[in-house]
Length: 207
Image 1 (tube, rainbow, N blue to C red):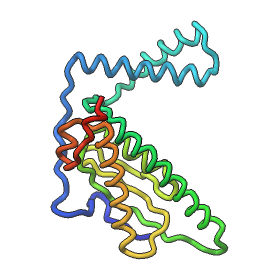
Image 2: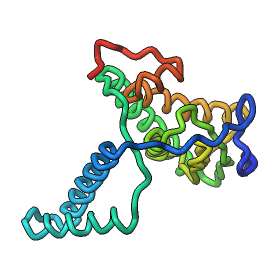
Image 3: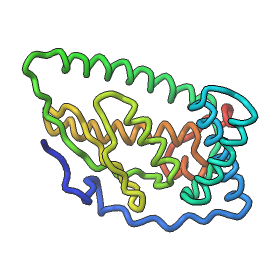
């Protein structure tokens, strides 16, 4: 297996500096907690498979206990939803999902073939918890790539790539991760994040 040295992201320039701690106002914190509680209740109801007052109250109690005893880090959404960029994100994801599925299936049925994998470190340019989570999920959902670890302080994703035939494949894999990040930021990023990546959003589709 080939790959980068642990803790040493490969890229142009020096390693990224640790990001400053997120500052979340009291109002934003309560809003985020309410959203998290709502999602936990939804998951609880889906697990039980029955919408009833008992399950609803039980979900509220369990969700509140989870948030109290296992507090989540502050993740706030200060971006804008852009319909056109969201559509591009969805279409390109489906296209890459189908293409990667066919590629992995071809590897799986090839007799005696053992793909040479690699682990690469990809420093993201927008080092927020939300961007880290969304980019990691998007990459992991595509067959052939899997997030092994996340350095939250440095904003680095450690990605396992299934098949590496030549050194250029490592560069291509890094570029795919950064392209996914770019699409996410263009679709839901804040104006400051969009400017940071040098992406020009479609203002007509902003909501």
